Amino acid sequence: MSLETSFFRMTAAQLAAGLRKKAFSAQELCRASIERIQQLDPQINAVVVRDFERAHTEARLADEALARGEQKTLTGIPVTVKESFDLRHHATTWGLTIHSEHVAREDALAVQRLKAAGAVVLGKTNVPPALGDWQSANPIYGRTNNPYDVTRSPGGSSGGGAAAIAMGFSALEMGSDIGGSIRVPAAFCGVYGHKPSHGLLPMGGHAAGGALAAPQLLSVIGPMARSAQDLAMALDVVAGPDAESPANKVALPPPRHALLRNFRVFLLDHHPVARADRNILGALEKLADHLTREGATVARQSSLLPDLNVQWKAYQIILHTILSHRDPTVTRAPISAHDWLDQLDLQLRIRRQWHEFFRHFDIVICPAFGTSAFPHSDEMDWRNRSLDIDGEVANFGAQLGWAGIATVADLPSTATPLGLSASGLPVAVQAIGPFLDDKTTIAFAGMVGHEIEPPALAL
Image 1: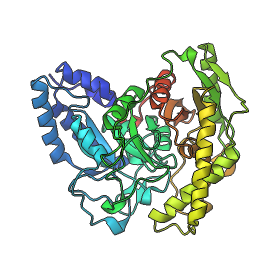
Image 2: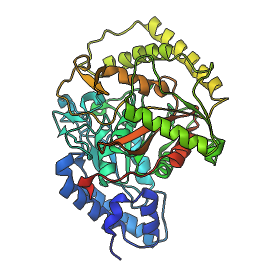
Image 3: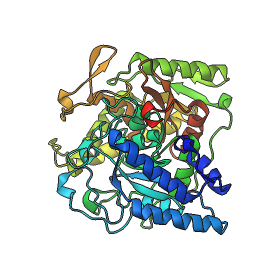
Image 4: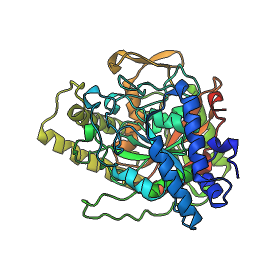
């Protein structure tokens, strides 16, 4: 049977069902995905490292497994991964020319787990240098464009992956996040993205130039997809620490609630440094109204809310210390070991405050970023880059405030598409939940988010 032309809008779960019913084969799906990338990606520049020959082999093996009645979670499903992951026989540059000659000897652990579940890996997607921007442009692979408006950013640093999902090049993407690098691209491109609880997914093979790097504070890897269901599916496949962990198994609790009316939601529309425009705040209000009509509890004030200003300062110190270690372009001076330990103590206090907060609430909804996708900028210094919020100039780097709420406390957060703005750009929010309650934020996102109209370039 032939593959439907609408495959590019199908979720991974829908594609798996089609393969199970023999509506199409894994090889047909692989060929169609590759042809789509070849035809449409010149306008977007999302899939910058292509592993098509090996993908054809993986698809053939998937069909052989299906013929034997063996279907794993991702058997035959086309996926892409962020350029920052090792993919055997390809460079892992992180957009830095100093690593352009590197060749990975083996796949990253997350990639290995995707392939073990039957995924067909088409290649890797674009990033900014050192994964340090909410754009995705670098001197090796060039610039990735937003599928909804090619003059705008797809987000970063997992921008190529979000664009690939929006364009239907692949059904799943594995990205990474330390400053909104999954959530912002997902929001800008109208797809779902999940920043997991810290330490839940293995970081092995996610280092510039294949360096042997210890797992970092704050940094995580996580999935992007066209549905919340697909996020949960990918999480089940990849979750679990590596073999070097003293506890290398994980059993996540189920979602706290199965019905929207049972959720206790806190709406957070303010931050001491970060702002949001009327489109984002309007989407939050509309969502709050919907939740109230469905019977959910929606609060806007609580004495239990951790001090966001304290969080912001701690997040900045920890983040910039990490970045100054791995990014040669960062000039900020490192802090002393004792100051570092003080920040770890503070982070623990913040985590415990959130633990108490989430005894009384299930979800926090707030902006993933203060605007929809912004225009491309050639200004690399964030101190000289501004952001237009409702016609006023706002501090660009302060948008880290929205990302940092979940990141500094190691909490899970799911970027959730809610619709298109009047200008035709995706609008989204993030749903933050308790530590290791990843399935709660994903389930909530599935209840309130929805597929938005695909970009015209994808039709």
